[in-house]
Length: 439
Image 1 (tube, rainbow, N blue to C red):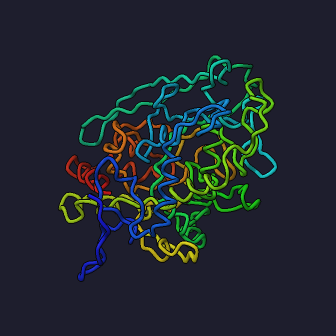
Image 2: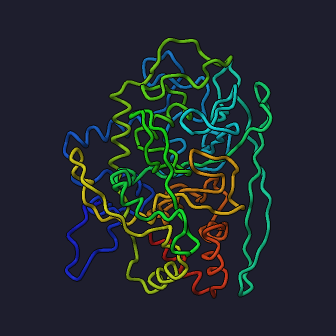
């Protein structure tokens, strides 16, 4: 269960400590929901306040408690999409739905970001209170196809098809659309503490080493600092900080305004409530949610000395997966938050953009990210997905139902790694999955 990690073993570094000193020994359904060990009493109180607001169900204004929902939204709380602080279901419309549809027009805004769709903005909000009409209904169908590994074993991939119906007004022609499911929120404080120079050191935009892998950074507009900053979070590395991620989700997903997003997404549309209550969430609450996410620890690795897991790690390296899913990063100095400083962490990401090929291309650019480029998602905790929110789902739109499906969707810069896995014998494929499930 939960306990503070002990000292490193005398014979070397403890591979279980994915989050360094902020590793949590918990492999239950609550593994993503534990605070850093060693928080002060005041920090624990602030973490708990943020946790309460992360779990809270918001209601329409005016209301004495948890006011501000909508009038357009996708769900009623942070936890509704981030089940147990993890990811969510790739479904739309229901109470447990966590799928988002981002939209934009060709071109860019004044900061080089996506251009809003007139009358719809940058995200389709498929829910509204009684008396208001949601922007659209999101429909999902799947096309299934069977493939074979070199040894003859078959596997099935499903490709989602998304359509929008029942729009409250006509969508302009030529709009771009991209589906997203949420990512887990644990460990983000550590990723934010990795120095920008270390992230850029792994970039190779011109593929100078000619290994076919050319990760590159995304630079995005930061509404807090009002400057362009390195993107670290989100499927397209299109968000620069946890604070901006929180404010953006409150605005677009729940319809709650803050100082960083002070205008309702329904402004100028018939669904607008006309209330002069913005920003609806005070800074104290916004900062508490930010602190909560900043201080969520990382679950420890399991079975690190198991022979099959060790074999799987060798295969992971031999397939060149580690060139994007970089095993080890080191956090820098954070004088305001010493607990995240100088930690050796194992997130298995480089936080860079990589071209994943046509099969995963969404056709919607996001700042410097092309339609085919995606940020390498961290793999720490991926082996616990099926315990955190069953059934598990993987990739940006949740199309992959298993880890092997997620691998076989890879293309572009990862095409060689996929081909390597395709040629493996079953025992080695099983070892690879055993390694991933140890993370």
